[in-house]
Length: 260
Image (cartoon, rainbow, N blue to C red; front, side):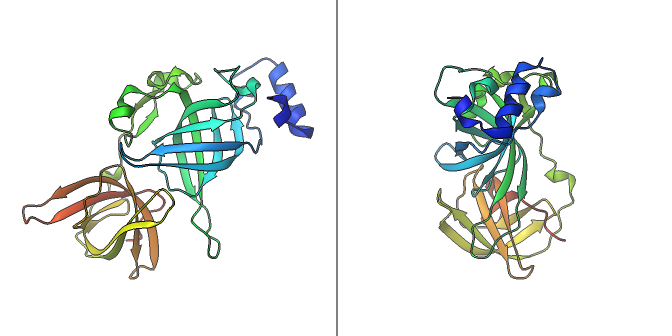
């Protein structure tokens, strides 16, 4: 099955790479294999989505692809790929390679007319099983531990991962009221809830908005501003209620900075 996915020059390159001694440089060569992949994401314990897409390139350590769903750096995704067995680290006899992957970068692609947003995503494979903390908090963000920079995915992702510390608070929040349309989306990208509101404070990386909605931490939301003529996607970090009894949702922008 693995050889059936390769043809022409790509097949020759892969055969040559697999026959030569594996060195850290060699096994990181990206192969342009347009394999189908099923990507599963849990935003919260109760909200998840799946998307079928195709790889752009792949190595035994990670892959690149595009998504219509927004995602952020540090999130875990579960991927199912008909991966050539020569590129696998485990499950060499299974039809499908099921591996947990850590999002290392996300870049919005230039939008096309009447098309849904598209994001270029790069991931690192981190293991056959997710870390224990994932089941309790699927929206938790991680990074590759310093001790794991030279190893590939193994049985347990716990061996490769550490917590990701947000840098959003390094930016000064400004008490600027910006009119915002706040929207939550379902697994198909359709609007579920919407509310016209204003920011209580905002920085290039995130904002606090007044809201009557109850949005769980880990959800992704869409924020639109006619004043700034822009739309951004953001991850919800928390929902709180102030001393005035008014709810706030605290978000971090994931696809671009706000132009203050």
